[in-house]
Structure formats: C-alpha cells, structure tokens
Length: 392
Image (cartoon, rainbow, N blue to C red; front, side, top):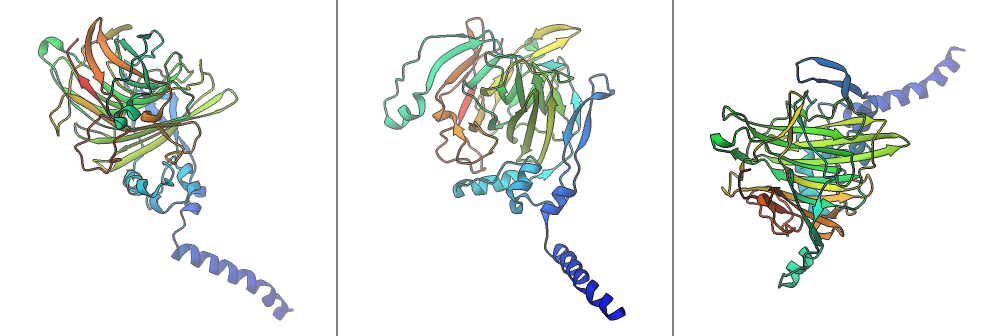
C-alpha cells in the first residue's frame, strides 16, 4: 500500500515543483495581471474633502511589470496602448509605455469646460495649395468656425478612441489680463453633442501672476458625480514637457466606460484609470484636438477669462504644438487602423475668438513643427500648431 501511494502522488508533486520553478525563473506578467484586483480611487473635492461617491477605477500595475515584454492581453488589461504592428512605430511606442506607472492622486477643481453645440461654420474652404504633397495634406479641411473657447481640430466621424501628443506651453500675460487660463486636450464628443469625455493639461496664471501647470480629465453630459475638471495632481508637468494621451470609450447597454491613459515622456511617468457612467446624453462619436480658454466657475457664476500668451519654450514661438493626432473606430489602440487627421474625411478647423478678434488659430494639418528629440513621425502629417494671436 505504501509503494502504491508514493507512485500515485509523485507525478503530481513533480509537476507542481516544475511549474513553480518555471514561474520563479521565467518572469510571467500574465500571472501578475490575473492576480491584480481593481480598486476604487476616490477624488478629493475642491473643498478638501474625500468624496464617497466620486471615484475612478484603477488596476495597479505591478512594480516589475515590463510593458515592452507584455502580451497584448496584458497591455489591454492595464489600459496601456497596444503594441503597434508597424515596426517603424515600435521605438516610439516603447518609449511611451516604458515610463513608470503611478497611482493617480485626483483633486477636483473649479474649472469646467464646454461643448461646442453653438458653433457657427463658414462656407467651404477651397484648397489653394500649389504642390501635390500639400494638397494631399490639406484637402480634407472642409469647414471652419470661430468661437470663444476652442482652437484646433474636430473630426466629425464616429470614434471610440482618440490619441494625441503635445508640448506643455509656457504661459504669460500682463497684469491687465489676469487671471488667464488655457488648456490643451484631446477628447471624444462635444461637437454638436452634449456628451464630452476629455483629458489634457492646464496652463494658468492667477491674479498674483503665479503660474500653474497640471494634467487633468473631465466628463460632461453624463451622470458622473463631477462635471468639473479633475487634476491628476501627482503626474505633474511643466513647460516643455512632452505629453502623450489617449481616451477610449466602451459602451454596453446604458453603461459607458471611459479609459484614460496619460504619459509624461519628460518625467518618464504615466498613469491609467477608468471612469464609468450609467447615463449619458449622447454617444460621443467625434474626436477633438484642442487648445481651449476654459469656463471658470466662481460662486456659481460662469466666467471666461483672458487666454494667455502660449509659448513653446524651445523655439520661443507663440504656439502650442500637437503631433501624432489620430482616432480609431474600434478599441484597438495605436495600430494600423488608426486614422490621422490628415486623412480624416470630415475635419473641422476652429479658431478661438473674441467677437471678430482671433486669439488663437491652428495651422493646417501637416504644417506643425516639432523641434524636440522625441522620434515623432518624420512626415509630421498629423501635426499642427495652435498659434497665439492676441489677448482677449
């Protein structure tokens, strides 16, 4: 009996020992992913309190997680951009996902942004370019508009993912134009719809001429417990920092999950999290890349203050630089299905204006410049600058 018993348990024991040894010697992110539980991360409100109903969901990334060696399943699990199929984009992707993941610290602010429901468009813009390469880049810009808040581009096509890269500008303004507020962001929805999900950076100056720079996200036109900007306080940014951001939506019945991924390539830190809503006014089916003069809530009253001088600190040009602008109609992120703004079929150009006075205006797609070391696409086909023109 004793010999039979030993013969029966030995194979199972051996298999268990081999399996444990294999997992110990060979790094397995798949096991880590399955062993990690999501958790609610609560938002600190503007009065300094922790709200018990304002939160995001996060999947803490293990300390030893190497995204460059992760499987596609693991990348999706942690809300990282998928590995590109185009080998030419692989080095760029590796730099983005190799930044250190941090658990975000979220603080609600008094700033609230706006949709673009009341946009008034001008007539069709004829393509006046002379070279074949310029014509290929610019022919899709069919409409233009002006308004008090947005400068940049809207792609009026269904989309569930928007992606963009930009440089945090330095802001300044004379005392007579303080306070002054600006934002640089990407988003889904908000163009002729009441629902807008967005993420970006703020560059502001208060009445004492003190500047602040920070990453943020916001949901409008949903039953999310705050419609105000939420500051991602510990990601941090400063003028000249190179920001990468993507926003995706996933809808199941009456529930929409919004996934945010934000990376500061200069500080080499990134974060990712989800916000879930059960009511939303519209499906957010447009994509945006925008420089904005945001609405500020002060004692229940909405104000639009001055738009500051935005300066690229490397070139000293009065501009906000956007690059890598693309969107997708599926939740497959950062692959050959992504569509850049130079190929968007319903691209709308907006200028920020105070009446007839233009404050900020975008250049045409493909005409942006990027005097930085990060290896963006050499063609710059999906880049543009938002050039500062005047104070409000």
